Length: 201
Ligand SMILES: N[C@@H](CCC(=O)N[C@@H](CS)C(=O)NCC(=O)O)C(=O)O
Image (tube, rainbow, N blue to C red; front, side, top):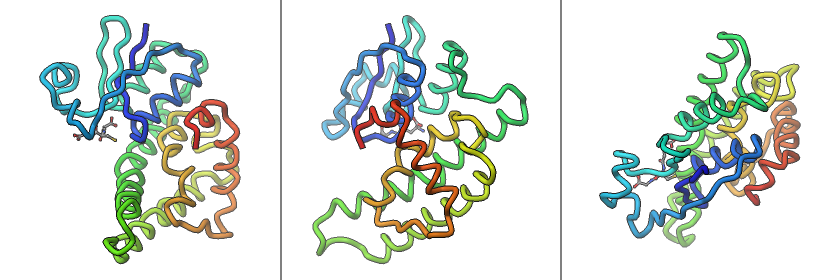
């Protein structure tokens, strides 16, 4: 039995949920209330010393960090595979996952945090700066998607890494430039996948 220590709005937990659904794996979600600090209890710190969700437990195997969990799931449950077969392709996917985790999810999180504040308390400059970061990332993805349906050709862990925030670009107040046609088509294709729909965006 697979158990996922999860927080509903966490983009890293969402990445893992997409992969579990892609692979048609049954799992139990265990809600970790981040607002109450459940992730810093001694019991939880035994599972993940960083005190963060997601954590996945598969029988007696404990794995934390969404990117590492998703690779574990792809190794352990290889059908359907979400990684290219060749080393160069696998390296490209890992670079894109890293790019999503470090350059896309953080600015999107900062914009959402500002937008959740009452209007009078929002920092408009900060919002604009991070929206510009998001737009730059989407511009880079446009080139990656040239001639391809998904970032690595077939749907892969690279696409999964972008799903939680790429689908929220309207809520993030980011206008998709008309020139980003590959990105627009890619987002449309992502939206059609049952795994992505299961996130309920
Ligand atoms: N690199 C980690 C990041 C996980 C992460 O930042 N999770 C956040 C929620 S979205 C968390 O648990 N924050 C609680 C805290 O830091 O106290 C991953 O990919 O799993």
